[in-house]
Length: 393
Image (cartoon, rainbow, N blue to C red; front, side, top):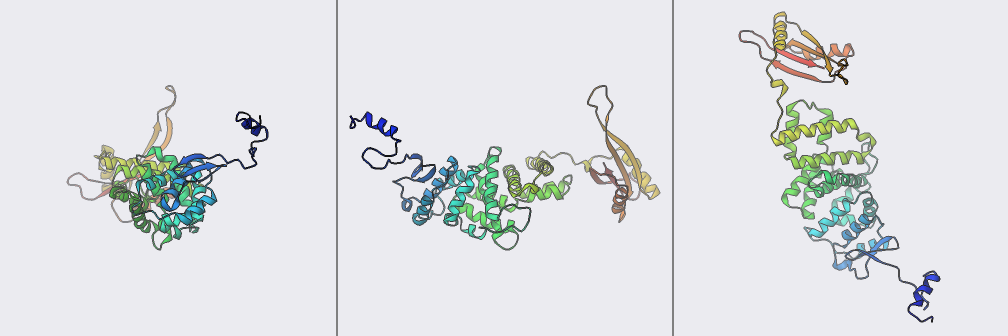
């Protein structure tokens, strides 16, 4: 009876399933994950038939499978690949590029898998410039992570935005490379553009995609710095950003990269206020790139009130003010309008030092200014002089 094939499995289960009756060890279960890669005992290992020396894509394939399954990559497997895997050809085959993108787009599990590759030197083989940023400290205290960890964290954050963009592969690779220039002297964005162009070409992207990735790396700080430091009402500001990004597709990617970079930096680097400013800038730049540019308020014809103020300012040689309350419709039809503040129009002769003087008066009275516009008014024929109109709200 003990030799019966029907009884032996049940008896083995009753005994705990650890050893067959012959005294040998039970082979552990292996679940296929990818070509040459299996799961065993809760970690990712190489299949018995895997040959790292004949399969240069195997390290990336194993890493992508581990990250997607949320399992750790076996130390033995990593060391075996580090010892035997051949270098990838240049440019990389399409499968290698796809596996890298899959790895970067797998979310938080990417971190531990990437660190496992990095510990055994596999990342340096894939990206020779990585050694310069590995464990490199940040200069700005707002950063939570070293440069190399920040790059991976940015890719993890970018993986949350892949449905927002048409080319998630370009977003993820740009996230991985955006600060790669910090290992070189000078402006890291400028140095990073050169490195990113070389890496993207080596990975196997075509000329257009290489240009997009290099542009994203070069201008990865452009949106947030412009939105928080420049006047978004100034058409020249918006045009400068539009010229830098060149296309709506690149702008879409840069918007996502900007947010991913800030979120991966630390809590002090991103807020709802910064997000709203960047979104506003992106909308304005998108309008320019699409040719749907809104009318410039400064180019609108002056109203009768503007002309009255201007003529009086020329006649008196002194600033002339007009004050008007601002309201919005009530929440209820029977209610009163909600006060928003006041609009202050000031017509002043176009003279040196007049703008600082007006701003100083407002600051002296501790007035809160939400928006300010400046325009030069054309006076009627026969009237000499030049007048500036300041619109403070």
